[in-house]
Image 1 (cartoon, helix red, strand yellow):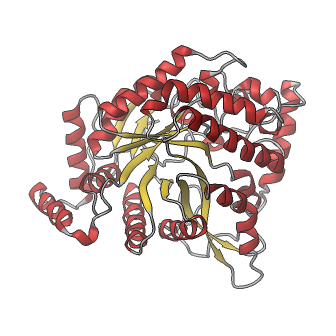
Image 2: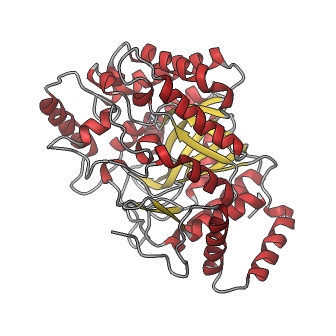
Image 3: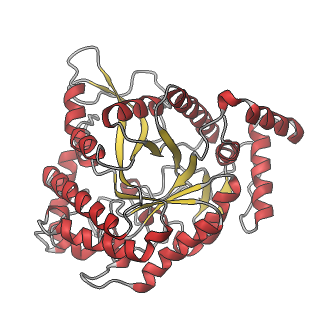
Length: 457
């Protein structure tokens, strides 16, 4: 079923640069309520000349994707396997996803044409090492071509080495709970960096390695995430007849964290052994945590979820922070305030979270900060526009106060496969018709791209 066009926006197929630029212009016109293109251009020029709205020179502006969520047919991965079990914890399989595996040239060109200078994407370990010890040169070359296309379009590549999914064989060996996992991961990092490292701008060892702990603090009526994933693990192991099977989502949270911490250290060392000057960090899932009036365990939550990773971040070249909303922390995270606007996934509409989180993490780590994911799930793109406008205004305030923020990367470039929720949540600044793989730029894409092009609010 096709998404209806956003109000005031004429859908256009993305096939050539001229069409894309035309669609961008139409989107901006619709968003601005009918003002002429001349007036819009004058407004943009005025904003560009306002130094108070300008971001630092060489600021990174980008969008993010993740391999399993957009590439399609990641058949050697643990998640593909689980998606197709009779009793699956996934709403639907990822399937062809956005077919970014084949369509990356046009998608990267689209990103650059919109005005961005950065692309964050991930490697699929399961493609590169589909069987233990066998590394596919063809797949390494595929990712090298992706990196080369980024450079052709003057985009800085932010490369995530592991974004949740892992090879099947790795999961059957116990995943991150396996004592051998850090060495296996370091071997992959070394092989990938040796083939790709000269084209990488920034490297990230892991995407959101603290998610298992973060989920433990969520408190939703009738839903216990820890219990849900424990039951899910038992079902998966039973259906696969694989008593050792475990992965990022399904396993013992403490053992997974211990494995990830060790793998980050060894993986980062492996990356640096090939290219010592490459900036290496990781991407931390965060909420803008605020204390409840009574019985708040805010300090305990921060120590449990972020503490070990913020300590590790002090030794990194940068820290990526990924934030979408706030949490009012009592004994657990409380439900959103009564009457608060909610996104389509039930999170509070709270763009001020960006400013608060970059201030907190900068203070805690004293390393450069990069916002590597931020956005909202909504079918009303005008709400996404307002979200980004407020988020960036807050971010600019933090930068003006001296917080070292090096970039802002939106989630996501495209509507995509959102893990257990399937394709329903719409986070993208570009819509995707999955029947035709046709891309349609939303007003938020045009707006955010214009901010990126001007490097100014």
